[in-house]
Image (tube, rainbow, N blue to C red; front, side, top):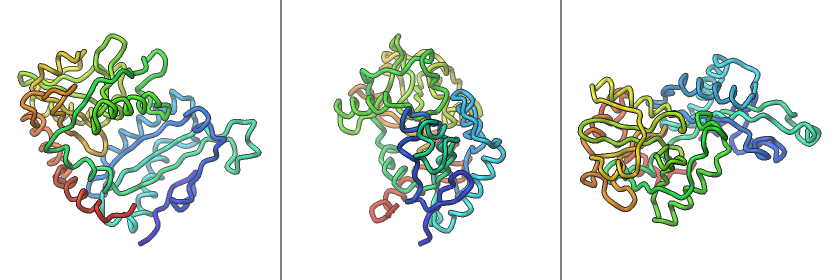
Length: 312
């Protein structure tokens, strides 16, 4: 099987040899922005939207990677093309990482210098979505954690960056509450913001509600879900959501790039609605599957079987 290659500042290196120095600003400060895109039928999905957010994140972080969004898009397609023989006809994730580079006074210790570093890698989604296959039918359990979101006045959550230890703390807290539980964050007022890498939705009385966009990462998949709802004439509102609203909801779900959308059937140890995936969720997921030409939950089940013997 051919070896996967990583785009590394204009060259391609074997995946297992792709390294960034311990003196890089990414390690010193978490000073890196990134994007995760996925493919359907081995074609990037919403790539341009992800790249637009990447460049918005770079602008916020004041990182100049040295080339345009068109050049980044071209480098992405080059990376995919070079890796197709190693992707086994599977759908894959596309990861863009942009770091500021090494701190200046370490420049003699870093072979790649102190300029920004751009890496692009692609990896089949076998484990990533295969491991989530059961959620499409069973649903996920989300719990409110003591760890809250970082207010936008401190660090703008709309910039997708690697300075996310608060996500990991929330994940650890959720796991202590119940193995397999997912973390759901709130703001200082107690309103729900987002999950750790996911966006949150509820439905009640035929209407969809999702948190306001100011203290969250405005997910590309979140927007896809909202666009699908509009297309299906389902009213959707960006609003403040309290835990009370989730307990009284008919259904809930979350969105994320690789898994698209997954139902939430339990919230803080209580069932949401009937405790099963709801009709609005199912309608949206069917529309999403139709749009991309892939049965999303069926693909996840297929990848779950492959994952039993598949080696990354």
